[in-house]
Structures are given as C-alpha cells and as structure tokens.
Image (cartoon, rainbow, N blue to C red; front, side, top):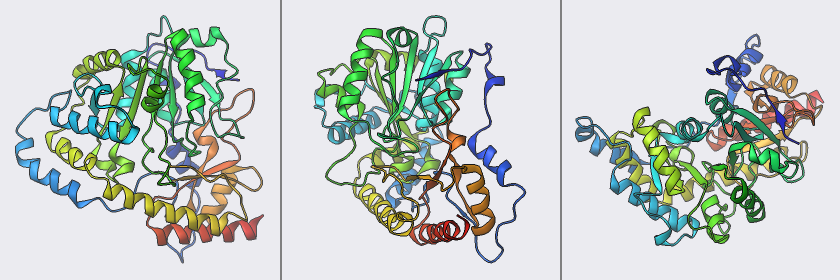
Length: 408
C-alpha cells in the first residue's frame, strides 16, 4: 500500500531531504579509493557518449542572431511543429491528434518541467496528494512538497518492476491531484504496459487527477522492433484522443547525449498545456533561440539515436556476461541503469566497500526511495549507470565482479 507523509508548512523547504548525490558524497567522503587505478563513477546518470555534430553545428549557426532576441515562452512555431512530427511518428499518432499550437510546450529539459507542473496545476486546498513510484526521481517529491502537497508513495512491485496502484481506494484517488510515473522507469528500466495505463486512465476518468508521465528514457530501448509504449499512444489505443488529464515529458538529454543543452518538451491535454503555458510565462524558462534550433536538428534525426541505442545495447550485453551469473538482476527493457541486488542486502555497505576496494562509485538504492510500512523497496539494491564509454564500463563491471567474488 502507499504511505503518507505529513503535509508540510507553506514553504515546504524544511521538508526537503538531501539529494541522493549529496548523501553519496557524505557516505564516501572518508574513503581513499585505490591509488593504482582511476576512479569510475557509475553513480550518476549523465550521458557520456559523444555529442552529435549536427546538434553543435545547428547551435553554432544560430548563436549570433539568437543572443540579440528574447525567446518566447511557447517556443518558435517551427520547433513545436518539429516536435509534433516526431511525436506522431514515434508513438503512432495521427497528424490530427497533435496540434503544435495547443498540445506542445517546449521546456528546459524534463527536470524543470516535471518540477513546474505541480506548482502550476496542483490545488493543495482541494486535492493535496501527489502520487509517485517508490523508488523515484527525487524531483517528484520536492515538487510536491514545495507546491504544498503531500507525497504519496506507490511501492514498486518486485515481481513486475512497476508501481503498485491496486491497493488504493476511491477515497485515495479522490484526494489525488497528480500522479507521477516514469516509463521506462528509473531505476528499474521497466516499461508500463497498455493494461496498466488502461486501469489508470479509467480511474483518472472517474476522479480527475493529472497523470504526468516522465518518458525521458523512452528512446534508449533494447529491442529495435519494440519501442516502449508512451502515455499518449496508450491514450489513443484507449480511444482518448483528447489526452484528457494526461501530460508526457520528453528530453534530448538522454536521447541525444546533450544534458547541457537543457531542452525538452511537454505534450498532451490542450487545457492543461494552456494553464501550464500561462504559468511558465511568469516563471521565465524560455529556451534560447540557438537551443531551439539545435533541438530541431536533434528531433529531426534518428540515425544518431539508433547509434546511441546500439552502444547501450552492447554495454548491457557485456554487463550480463560479466556480472549476470554472480549477481543476477532483472534485465532492463530500456534506459541505461542496472538495478542490482546486493549480496547481503546492505546497499550502503556495498557502495562503501566497492569504492574502497575497487574505486567504483554506485548509488545505494535507499537514496532513491523512502521507507514505508510495507518496507523500503530501494534497500538492498544499488543503481549502476552505464553512461561512460564501453571500455570504461567494462572495466568497472569487472572490478565489481572481483569485489563480489572476494568480499561475499
């Protein structure tokens, strides 16, 4: 079942917990890694593959003219049209399903947008609860608290790798203003199937909460013949072509290896987009024009994305052959994380020992989750981010194997 956290004061700042990487720095701060090998960070999901030249060229060509103009919060029409074309092609939508002027809003990456959506759309006086998976991306929790809401945790089912929504009663959904979901998931890499979306959409129809689908890992899938299902695609299959109550969040950071570009978009329910656009006009997060031009180039090209997927696929195959037998784990459907169960269940001790003995940093699972009456679904795991180039990841994985063989 979900667990409650008490409603904070108006500001909410005092209820924010340290970010996972702050906790990791404190955990490892007194350790000296081996001096005879370079440290390797598998702890943070920052893509390290090369930035595509077509993106840097487009940004450079537009830079001079860009700096002399204020960008519009809604983005340039050409960018929204490019995004609409990509959405329809990728998620099997009809051209008439997506109006670039009504259904799309460019954003400074998914992090900004995922935080801002709760500030813009949550009414804590009427529907204070914000549901989210557990483990989760901590921005969801912070966004809920700073909007005056109450985070409600949906523990990930160990069997399916998906958040459990089956234990909530009608009264729980009636108090819910917004639910965050991540598909493909962070950290499990599991993709939400149509049956799950159908069940949630039926509840949304009855209770009127907002579904915010974080799809920033959607293009890093293993099987080229089976791209992950998206929420708008699930809506269309369910006959909900107005996307009522539904928003999706996409980014170029993972898809195109440009986390520093800070570019993404929100798409979905035109009524919600209109409200969100009004909020962001005051928030002031418009994308610079050279960023928009670079983004257009990125969304128009699939070759670099396919090459990106191939590189991750190769690393996951190597990971399975190196550590899959000694520390079995569920193979992720997408993304670039391995959600690794640790041999003795103590994820913090594992992370400390691995850094001390092998110079490899990983993120304890409990830093991505919260304890609930039913347990803490993050404990007993560490998250490995296979973001570095293949030789670096392979070396780190071999160090992990050696550490497990000689420490457990």
